Length: 193
Ligand SMILES: C[S@@+](CC[C@H](N)C(=O)[O-])C[C@H]1O[C@@H](n2cnc3c(N)ncnc32)[C@H](O)[C@@H]1O
Image (cartoon, rainbow, N blue to C red; front, side, top):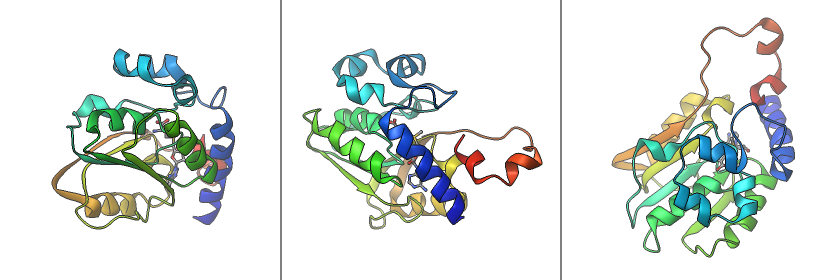
């Protein structure tokens, strides 16, 4: 498990500098457009924040975030989804980003500072151990993160713990449709490809 976490960190240290050329799935402004993110939010996002987006889907297509809600972004990357959630939750809400990779958390902090939003916080931690109390969040969002975790059952248990009763999980992710070949199942690097 430790080797897998190290491989994921190494990959996302590089992605924190630039996601260009490192993924087959949507990145940057064009990627967010293809995934159906609201045009008005794309127009409001600082260019550096938008260019560092890398997601596999659009968690906001699954339900809306209401003003005043508390939202957790589980694996916030460089912060684009956090920005979208922060705009929806408004000044009376709170959006919290957590990410395993120090460089990503630093990048997200830098990016969010440029947005003018004040209702956010970011922590660098392993999301398998969420640093918030029980029943704290109204909504948990996640975009291309749970597939990376070697402890998926623990991820869902933690998300369930921090969600208020009746809270919502809106996540986009990758799933395997058939078994991987043996040379990939034994490779820590393959987890983050
Ligand atoms: C596809 S990116 C997320 C993109 C982000 N939603 C955005 O708006 O651009 C995946 C992120 O998951 C993080 N990650 C992977 N495993 C993690 C874990 N166990 N705990 C926390 N973050 C994790 C990576 O460091 C990476 O930043």
